[in-house]
Image (cartoon, rainbow, N blue to C red):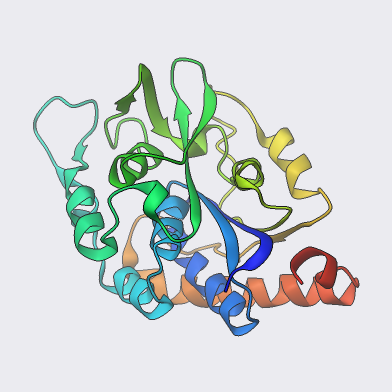
Length: 251
């Protein structure tokens, strides 16, 4: 049974997203099951698996055994990216088994960036695999996704921590897991100040795993990242309890 009003916002950060699993383990131990989930880039991949109802053990296996070729393969074709993302479609079909976002048992949104307007676009309907391809489409690495006249790229360009997206889904309280800063050095749409205000809002608990020195691009540090996510979530929720706001925020 979901926890009414509770939203989970999972930030982008490539392999650093493995820390999300550690945070999810802590939520499960505390009997907290988000009613709404939004994810950016790597957070969208983890969030979609969670929203699809995969067990945490299954997600753990995906993280520990997964490789880049499950998401994309090198291509020599001129596709505006060095990786062909079609393997992600196969992975979603084989591992998640849900084709449409609206068929997920938990409300889910994948955060992307419209390259033309430089605005955040949250995909909440249609092909799940397509939405995930758009959310992870780091320019130069993966090609953009053209959708209804929009050119969609990695959501981290405008909202690496998707607090606004999960609130738009209906969340009144949010647990947000940040694994890396906003992409403020990119000339797309500087948003760090806006996201910082969202982090400070009442009803939001931000989990910040300590990932210094851990790899963003290789899977060797996945076990340490998972543990970092667990430790950070325990500390964040304990701090909320000590301040007397846990019942208000996540109870």
